[in-house]
Amino acid sequence: MNYLKKAINKVGSQKEFGHIYGVSQVAVSKWLNGNKIGEDKAILVEQALNGFVTCEELRPDVNWSVVRKGVPPVALNDKK
Picture 1 (tube, one colour):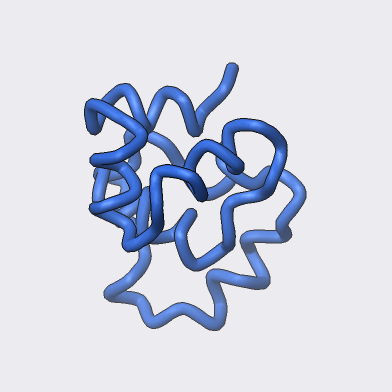
Picture 2: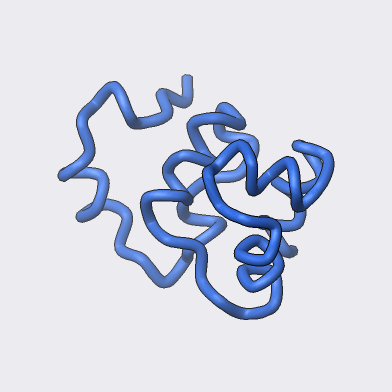
């Protein structure tokens, strides 16, 4: 499953997705076509969508247990 596409569809469009996360529609298109979304943006997506899509889904190549240790607790999505 393309989790980035799932997140974009939830927001509405590539342009709106880019606007929310401070990047251009072109950057979003590049992510969809093989460029990797940055860890910082993956965290923002997870937070803004309340875990609808997770960092682990967006970037399975990243060791999120290590990355999350460096993120302030308020920035982590609390999944209850």
